[in-house]
Image 1 (cartoon, rainbow, N blue to C red):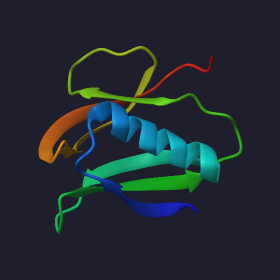
Image 2: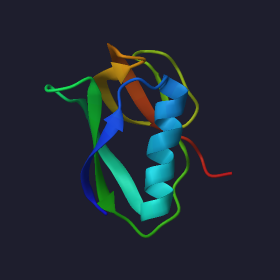
Image 3: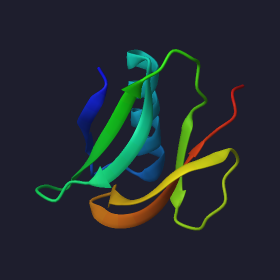
Length: 93
């Protein structure tokens, strides 16, 4: 279902990326925004409908390199602490 959903703020970067990738694949959606929720220690992930196969997501510390294409930068909760991150779309394998 496209729209904005909560994403656990206690997850590590790898687990948050896996959770968001799973949401994309299960719902035929594409992540378009990721923000920290101002009312709780959680994140808000925004998705739109899509009909093509997408590569997995990778979340890394802001400024760190990653394979793939950077799709957004954000400050979100990672392991319960606000952290600046970059989100990358990995190539299809």
